Amino acid sequence: MAGNKTFTMIKPDAVADGHTGAIIKMIEEAGFRIVALKKTVLTPERAGQFYEVHKERGFYNDLCKYMSSGAIVPMILEKDNAVADFRKLIGATNPANADEGTIRKLFAKSIEANAIHGSDSDENAEIEGNFFFARTEKF
Image 1 (spheres, rainbow, N blue to C red):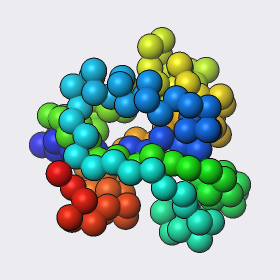
Image 2: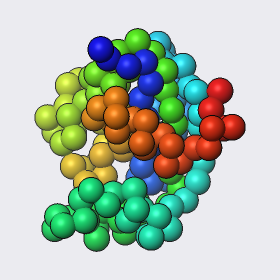
Image 3: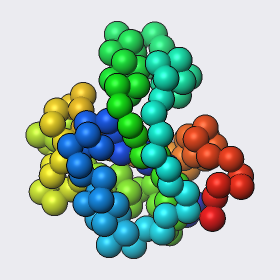
């Protein structure tokens, strides 16, 4: 059964380019309720902890460097079928392959600087949300 929460974060490129408000507007207009939200900066070490699952992959160090290069906006979102619906809203990882009107098609610069993260499963949504937010920060 699909869950009703997912995790996302607006990545440094999209925050730096001033797209945070437009992305949040799209998220809310798609029927998601924001349960938790903050603006923060990851240290390279904290980025490494978040992306530890990719530690053995060739892109890991560049990913950690990129994700700690500027402010991010992590969020927990709520909606029925949250993970699947959100992944449809953000579009393909490579913005060149993303459907028209998706967040990545509109705001991503490249496959690496692809504007936004979206959890790929209910289990990862919970893990990722708990990485960024204490229980008292979720409404």
